[in-house]
Amino acid sequence: MTKHSILDLSNRAMLLLIVPHGRAEDIAHYALAEGASGVTAFPGHGTVPKRLLRALGLDEVRRELVVIILPELEAASDLLEKIKLAGHLEKNVFSIAFIQPLLDLNENGQLNLEQDISPSKADYRSLLVIVDRGEGTTVVDIARQNGAVGATIIEAMGSADHSAQVFDFEINPRKDLVLLVTDKEKAETIQQVLLDALRSSTPGRGISFMLNVTETLGIKGLGDETALLGGSWTAPTPSPHTALFILVNRPKTKKLIRTCEAASSAGATIIHGRGIKKAKVGSVFFKESFDVERNLVLMLIKEEQEQTILRALRDLNETDTECALSVTATDAINFQKFSD
Image (cartoon, rainbow, N blue to C red; front, side, top):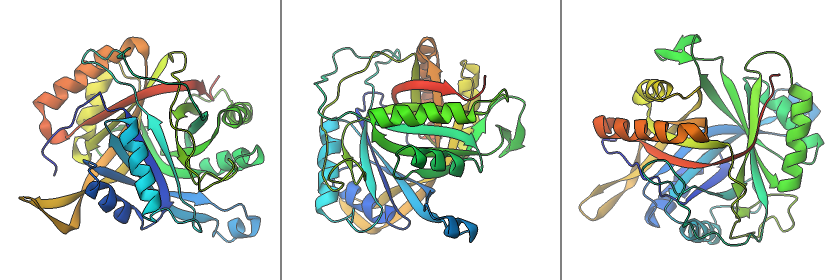
């Protein structure tokens, strides 16, 4: 188990890649050789828009979501360009990549207003939709009907009080997290159509929200799908919700969830993954990597909760380093609930 903690809220960018199953390892090794401190991979699947394939149960294509956290937007941009030039994102297979800018928070959980933010050349969004397990394909179908070329479905769990007992802590029924990346206008249209189609009086029906995206690669329908687009970004009006992405060693997930609930968090979405690192002795890297079971815990918190929750995370980080926490934050735009 990883024994160290990385709790640096000043990280500025998250590079995310969706690649065919089996490619995460190669990309992780390359990123680590280029200076990335760690890479986490999560299993997922895409869907093929063919009715016959769906009838035969052959409409799902295995994917992997690769997450790399970097200290600067420029470092993420440079790494993405290197990954492209090294041929790790082939033109003839389904691979996409995008850069998610992060908030630079100080130790009190407040935004650093001295961030260097320049005018945007590209205006894209990643749309995240969390629904009950099995409804992800419905979300993808609706998104396709409204202009989305494709999306990735990642199996997840939800945590909340008074739920079923799994892994010795309370969770809601299993969830699907649907991720798609497109331009701002199309993302807003898709989100509204999803809200109209899925809204109900059932509590916990699901949620959707968007995140800012700077550079994209391989997004079909946005001009040259192999071109690197964008580069800088404009900070939007501060969002009333912040998205926290917390990486934690899997056995410590229960403790993390309880710590955040005690600090006023209302719940979270949990995704199983694996941290990929290179074994190192002295200055020599072994070719073999070793994996650490990691969970990504996604929490949407209100602005007034930020300081309380981030301080609780710092306390947990100091008292239990085996959690190996890695925490990043960004604005959650257009947060919507599907429940009335």
